[in-house]
Each structure stands twice: as structure tokens, then as C-alpha cells.
Length: 321
Image 1 (tube, rainbow, N blue to C red):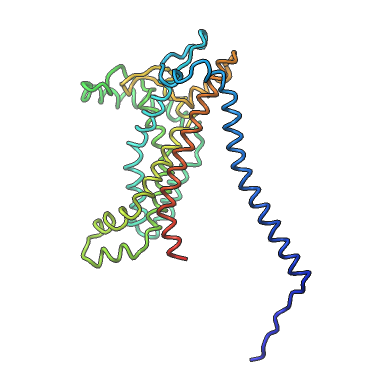
Image 2: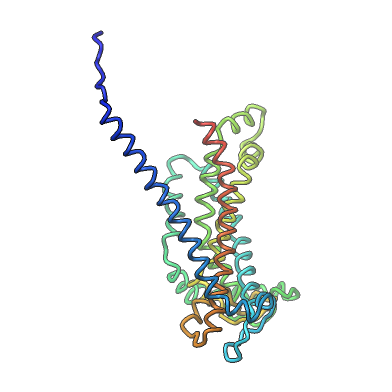
């Protein structure tokens, strides 16, 4: 066969390409550093604006329950409590459904039905939070008030969690709304984690005589355990930062109550409700400190979730390469 002569690059062309590589690398590095700089700038600006509140209240800001804008006495313990309870309740409801749906889509469902079901579940993430809030007010809250809460009070009323009048709105409604909102995130990430597990894990378990469920439980779920935990933490990060839907159904009362029927408050809903009403510098500074606390918690939770997901995806990707 005749040899094909490759075009030779002269010195000027090689120098031009080398210069282009340097420019591209510099632009990419600047883009990455600009995102990091944006986060640092956000923390610094919020920290500076929150300094008056930090100096006035110190650590008491985190452990006191009084929120009185008139007397300018602020404590976020009820907000922290409401954020934790509503988020944990959402995880309690969403995790079994999310993991079950992800296992079905990745391991058990027929191949022809997997894409449409996955698309419909992920489509829930595109619904605006205010739509969830409206649905919660006009559909979920009356349903809870007339059916679920009276039934829970009659059967489990001896527990502090299910005592009190059935308002409909409150911590239980907020937890249900958050569970619906974080469900598509948990399903999508968990499904990708399970699909990233090498088929050799499944084949080895089946070759040793394991049933379909035993192969899924032993070979797949254990291999992707850290990634599944990361998916749950990603859902938790979304639940902690959710604002509008929770504000519309939680009742917005800065009190600590053991009952899930009672109204509550979260850090995000407090900021959304009262930021426009902050008439004094200390009041505004206290709200910004709440936002700074919420920002730090959300970043830590999401960073931990990403690390856990990468711990599964990283070895698999390196193995493919």
C-alpha cells in the first residue's frame, strides 16, 4: 500500500498551538477559581453583615428560643429544631420509597419500561416549589386535618408526637411536602449509583447460587452503600434549604413542640417571611446570620454527599479506563 505522507507542522504552527493550549488552560483555571472565589466572597459578605448579631448574642444565638424583633432579642433554637425535624421526617418518608424505586428501575424492571418511569420520576424535580406549596395548602393540609391526624391521634395519641389539635398545617405537612420534593433526587442518584456497580458483581453472586434478591442485596447494595448514603444526604441538603413550599404549610410559629401536628418554623422560612420586615440593623443582621448558618450547613451536607457518591463512581470509572 502506498504510504500516506502526514503534513508536517512548521515551527510557527507548533508555537501557535502551544500558545493556544496555554490560553485554554488559563481560561479554564480562571473559570474554576472564579466559582471558588464567588463562594468565599459570599461567606465573607454574609459574615461581615452578621457581625453585629454575633457580637450582641454570641453563642446564645444558637441555644435560646426567644425571637422578639420588638425587643431585639433573637435566638434560633426553634428554627434549628424545625429544620432538623422537618428534614428528618422527610427522609423517613422518602428514603424507603426512593431506594425501592431505584432498585426496581436498576435491577428488576423490564428494560422497555425503565426510561419512561425514570423520566416521570425525575420530572417531579422540575415542578416549582410554589406549586407544591399550593397543593399542600388546598389538598394535603385538609386531607391531613380531616383524615390522617385524627386517625393518628386516636390510635397513637399516647405518644407526644401525635398529640394536640389537628390543624392540618404544621410539621407533619412540611415533612410530607419535603419528602415528595426530595424523592426524585434520591431516586435519580441512587439509580445511577446502582447502574455504576460492575455486572461482574451480579454475575459472581448468581454463579454462586444466590437468588435475584440475594445478589441485589449482597453484591449490589453493599458495593454501592456509600453512594446510596450520598444520595440520601443530597436529598437532606435539598430538604434543609427548601423555602417556599415549607413556608406555605408549616405554620410559621417559632416554638418548640414535640407534636408533629403543631406549627413550626425553619431557618429558610424565617428568612423568607421576615426579611422584608427587618426595620433595624440588628434585626437584619440576625436574619443574615441565620442565612449564613443555613449556608454553611447546606454546603457541608452536600460536600459530604458528593464525596460519598464519588467514592463509588471513582473506582468504577478508573476500572473502565
